[in-house]
Length: 261
Ligand code: MG
Image (cartoon, rainbow, N blue to C red; front, side, top):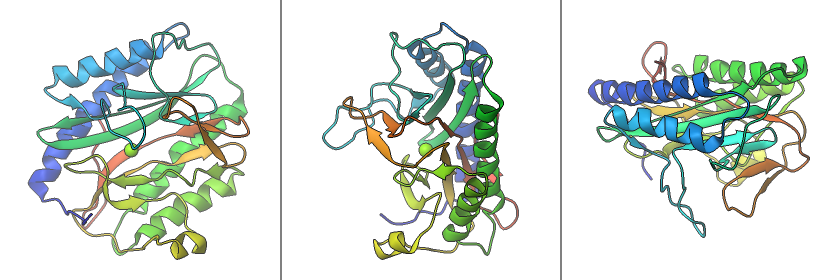
């Protein structure tokens, strides 16, 4: 898969795709309360996306040896890291933390973004996990400037997260976003010599690169399991985790956050 740099006109369309993603998130945030199901949140996001002339990017997303993705959002609760399947039977409770991830395709371009919310009262330690994850995302965005490399962005996120005593998920990374939801470059949240030996390649950032940065931060160990539904990823030790994501564009100055309202 080759790296595709975007023109300013293409980035302008991606900004509109990202704006729709942001609107879907705002609608879900307003509806989020104890007693709502993740299936209801899914319908809210789908309605916003379609009402803006866009298509849900996650719906029917293919995966090897698994059923296509059945929803518009990932709704991952507490120790679920990512890819939680939305369901009318899955009811959100007081004290849960809920990671909502959604994406859309607008005029052929994708936007992708995620937030983690506390539902009602949660302990200060849980709020801190969420704050550190969101800050890690913004550190990664700030590092997305020339002449930095992918490795610089990854290490910025990893060092920040680990300095707070948390782990970053290693099996899941951010990714290039454009006409497809997952393209070059891979945007990891950590860097290691082992990963380099296994083929992880560093490269300089370039004007016109568009990618999603999405730190997934775990309060405990970083070992993960995939559930029998083929999609939901949970922490093996049951520890809580948080996930924040923006799609951004690299420029010759500050990066543009595409998934803001
Ligand atoms: Mg993503």
